[in-house]
Amino acid sequence: AQSVTQLDSHVSVSEGTPVLLRCNYSSSYSPSLFWYVQHPNKGLQLLLKYTSAATLVKGINGFEAEFKKSETSFHLTKPSAHMSDAAEYFCVVSLSGGYQKVTFGIGTKLQVIP
Amino acid sequence: GAVVSQHPSWVICKSGTSVKIECRSLDFQATTMFWYRQFPKQSLMLMATSNEGSKATYEQGVEKDKFLINHASLTLSTLTVTSAHPEDSSFYICSAREARGRGETQYFGPGTRLLVL
Image (cartoon, rainbow over all chains, first blue to last red):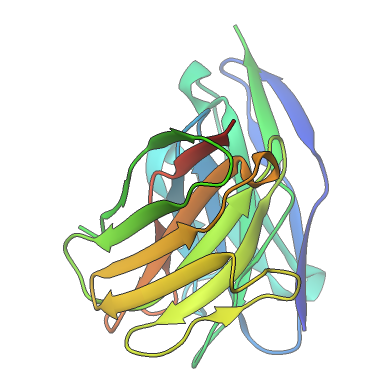
């Protein structure tokens, strides 16, 4: 069984300040973890993924996430928010190897204030 | 690389008609494709998983006779909403996983917005 919890449904930051979107997971086996971004009326775009290699993962648009097994967390960060970062962000977990069924978090809406 | 397309992007139909949505992997072969449904301001809900050449596996609560899925080739899966009703109005998103190379990553299509009048 696996699950993912996004701790904040809505996050608001000022432009130029750091972004932190929190995600905790539970999985019986070694998980693969992903962050996707969805802009209004658009599909999902892969930001970054963790698949048992380096625990600090760098993604597109300056985002990165750190896999912490002891804390079962995979928080998404960015040093400086840009207006174009305003979107919905989904944390996703799937089991590594074989058939993988993914589980989505409920999403975190990021608002960037000018 | 790893582009997934959906067609149409928007569809408006009358109640009782059937609507077909196509999902294509443009630059890779996808042995497995997934169909999701997203309600406004909610997360994605997996409807079904389709494997090329075999019957789709539906999630609990999803009517397989209403949502017909066909994965006829390694680059194409279709979702047909049969006898659509207003409650079927939603944002439908497909994703595809490559046969090899990219492992577990799912690549998502841009979605199809269905409005049933």
